[in-house]
Length: 165
Image (tube, rainbow, N blue to C red):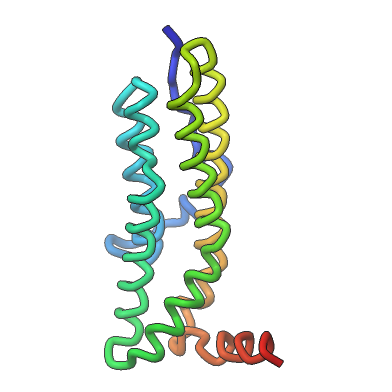
């Protein structure tokens, strides 16, 4: 029977370990990933580990976090909320891409013949590591946006209009 022991995904990350207070923006961004890792570490069956990193659930959690972050910053301005959400989603493109790769690798691991399951799972682990790295990069890119009281709205709109003309 193959061994499905997960590696330490967070060792190479720079932003994850930065201290933050309870309920912080940092925690909102990393919570879905840490919860998935915790759930996956509690089980040893490949299918349960794959399920812990369900791409659709992770994406929903992150998109909900983006909505909440924008709502916190702009509680009375829907246009400002939408602009901040759009910027955070744009910055998260590498995360969304990594999630798609995790989903595809999970499907391939599930469908692999028994003799090739270990190799499929190992390929999936590599995609999960890339997801952790993408989330780490996303957080570092989002920090200046979240730290700016305007949500960097002006910068966002300059980029939008520059694309059109």
